[in-house]
Image (spheres, rainbow, N blue to C red):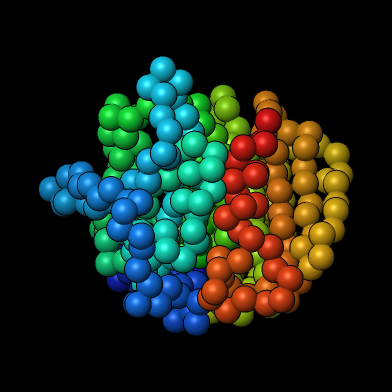
Length: 302
């Protein structure tokens, strides 16, 4: 199965709007408007891209050593949300603070992302690339340990970054996300890229996700989640059968024998919904803590 790709400006815009409604804006798991971050923990900044002022939030770990650069995690919110709301919902700063790493919360224009890289819409690829440039110059960040995690369309945007700038990204994690598998889409031709350093990939997805269905289909004819992950196993040159383990309602499928030091992982949450697992948004009993799982993946991927 594949997403139906846009063939004109109007259809591209309609498709992107549809993806917003399908994966995020119409979802009952969207961050509530009342969510508020801890103002003491987030610094706010701006960067101008193509004449547009773009905004972001930055969490600095309590202890920093300029002589020893540390990791950075880009946290990409779902549609109908903002970076501050995402920080409040995920509590990822607790992971970042304990690990001594930076976490960054960029804001998509119109509260969403141009994950299809439509040239008529916001240039989010340039925005996020220049944001990485800016922060690696201003704070002690290890350029070899730049990670991206996203929810819903933010997860799709994480996949897009792994396709478009794999040399800059160490690993990505998509929570309740997905991506098209149609190789005609230029921004998704991951297998055509010269991938000197493959990107490790993690997807965490619930089997009861009715907005980006685990089995595929839905409003945008999304591919099955397993097919998306197997696609990345192919892109990363993984060989052999994956290992499978279970912990409560979560089954982890892990491809270890991949190009370079990359790995590919799928966490399937039985009965899980379209959400950031472990948050207060539409949880199910026994679901994992996505923030802890994401950092564990980033920190321990070879």
